[in-house]
Length: 94
Image 1 (cartoon, rainbow, N blue to C red):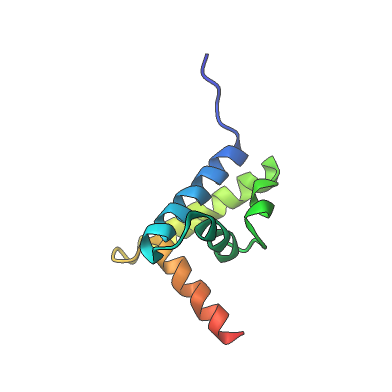
Image 2: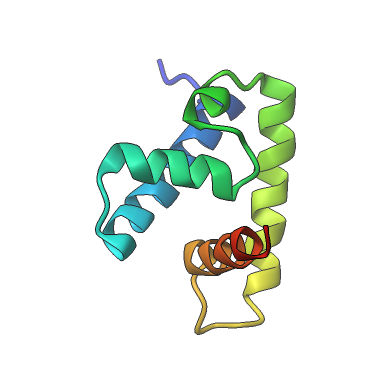
């Protein structure tokens, strides 16, 4: 019997994939990539992401899909790269 993944599980997988890309891109430890991924996507830290409920997970999955669709206008940009650049820019302004 196959069970369908929950929205929470799907979102966590999406964030882990982003963290893996960041880890390779920036050559940083995995735990740092997880924390950076959380902060880039608007969370306080990785632990907060892991406590997400189903309704919120559905909402943020939809938001991630929209970000991906919008970024398709720029084929030379990767979603993770673009988010990281935006995050760095915002951090510099603080």
